[in-house]
Image (cartoon, rainbow, N blue to C red; front, side, top):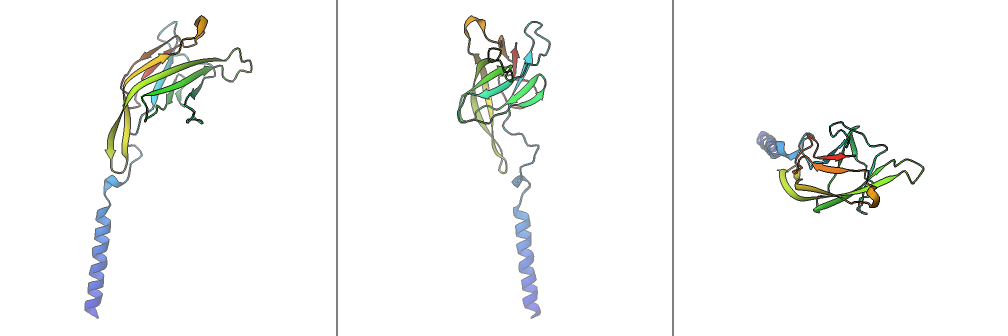
Length: 172
């Protein structure tokens, strides 16, 4: 009977060691692990070209019908973070100022298209892949009679690999 108890104990200990050793540190994706970065846009005064200028009642909408409930992350009063599509080389957004105004003639919509090359990078077995965006460019759809509220767009960082600084400056 003692031999049976000893073998059972040895078997249970072996199973516990096996199960405990099969879980590696890499099996859990830590919260601080870098993931697919958002595009950071900073708004600048077109007259001074150096002062930050918050757009009045800014609303950003994706023109993609598959993205319906998109709300940009407001970093600060002068910056926002927006997601780019990972499975495409282009993402279009409507930037709307005076969006909450009841007078529709005051609301101004500008469409901006961001073009890029998405590249998948392996993070870990627990976290999988993240996408970075290389070769970022932008196109502002011009309106008749100079009706754009966005005057120009400057790409500060053409490779979107992290969220440490603004990638795009919008002058208005």
